Image (cartoon, rainbow, N blue to C red; front, side, top):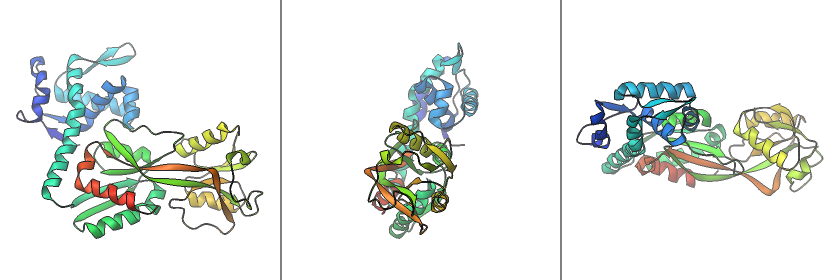
Length: 323
């Protein structure tokens, strides 16, 4: 677990106000401190857990362990919910600054070395791993041979919690402008690519000869979608319903090659981003939307982490890589 020792001459001074309450502070676990800060920000354990991309049970366990570490109660019952005690408010008041200080300290140490080196782990969703990450990592490897970059393919539901707890350094995420994504507390991000989405139809489809299509052209279609519960599935339903279309979802598949195989077999139509699209079956036609339909590809890091030379270099490479 990531921990920071709070020595009296350094970060201990930020929580010295606990001493009149009889708290003996030896260290604070950052993951648990982050949970307390989220409760203070969002007002409940359940909403804090959602912001941190963890379960309510996991958040409660982190807070209970933090209370044992601090030697005092940080939360108390308030009807069906909880509220911070005096000690909890005091600690939460400094939590964001303490968490940001850790990232700034790490960044300063790395900048002091004067070179981009060490280890950097990047987590990304599947099409970004195929279509964006290889060129970016190749650029990093060529320019900074002392930097050891590791890539892992994670869905955002797993990647962001891993980033929050320090297991990865940078996440490549996606979101749709019509469904904005709110980053959890302690994370920052920026768009590195705007990815265009096209309609995929069988070559003998009634629209296959068109130069472009509008969403209003798509009534009475059978749809091939991402699985229920995914952000892409929710986005597709939202767009179609906003145009008065009650979509028939005929098939669901997580991977774009599988979706395209179903389209090629004449089993429905789908929407497929251009990033990481890969090989396209001969019997599939792509039609651009009018107006264009796009998703945003976003790089996300722990707040303050972009001051680390390795993270800064990776952000530059991601923004420059062809998508």
